[in-house]
Image (cartoon, rainbow, N blue to C red):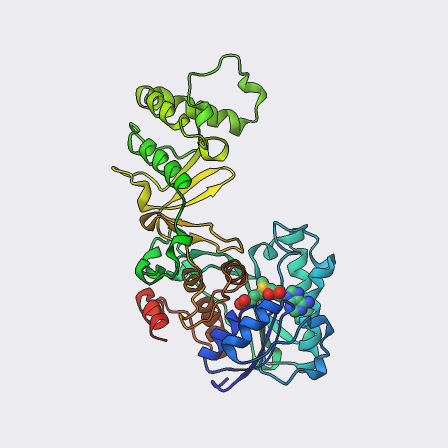
Length: 411
Ligand SMILES: C[S@@+](CC[C@H](N)C(=O)[O-])C[C@H]1O[C@@H](n2cnc3c(N)ncnc32)[C@H](O)[C@@H]1O
């Protein structure tokens, strides 16, 4: 296919597909999203007003197109949802894609969904999708392709399923050969960080005193331990001599294991931990999940908690190497960037999704985070679009992150 193609953007959100496909030369002729805020952001950025609820759109009113894109909603497929899948009415939005594709017969369908789709309902959900698209007259990748931006050096771990479909008369879909390096550590959050000096209202992103104190406490804890750093959750309440009254046999195995490990950690560091606990307990908010700690940043000679990324979770303060962020989610203020002592900004969230800095974000941060958390990574879409539409094989050399950031900044 040449670069002069037309595409439609279903469930368009703020336009991850739009950005990617128009960067490749495509022209968007129709978009739709039920969410008004998304429609406004989309129009502001791309000058095209998306239609609303797709179930109410007559396929005959959609212009002809070469490519149908759709990151269809994931609630019904997601692990967090009720797992009803295709039988859930929300799952049936997939059939709106089928309805539109049946009428227009575009050359390609490029679909995206949550990772769980590949295994959902013992594979029956995928089978249904595969069968429907095949019956429509498309070749479809045999298995859903699972891919994450961190696989190509973008510092976000976001495993998503990509479904590539090519109209049968256009030939087969080549096998997507991509050797994912499971231990890929080529990522660095540095590639997407804004300079603090350029952040408006920087104080709103700073962690407060309470969190600062808790992080400092745990930083002191990890710095002063003898021997190996704990690769298991540290529970302050178990940092003590083993309680002989507590019958470990009645507990689940994983729990008694952690208690035994915490006890050993305590015995190996008794003097330090006793004085540290005294200090920690003098902080009023040092309790509940804040008194729990998950060091996931590996072994280090001089561990410095302020050189990591952190998350306050119900299971405790989780600390990771500054390689990549977990998947961007809809919630405000999740990832803490240690070296900056602040949260990720919406602009940094947009960079994690590989949007150019020219993307106009919603003025309300809570809406911007939500929209970015629902979006798709632009570079990953480009990778699959090039592969599907132009038969361009994947080449690692195309993914030099420094140039991606420069490109983002220069637009
Ligand atoms: C996973 S998000 C896709 C985001 C998009 N790919 C992006 O880059 O921002 C799914 C989107 O489907 C939209 N949606 C849900 N039900 C819809 C419906 N009935 N009609 C149109 N859009 C719908 C949601 O508002 C949401 O923005």
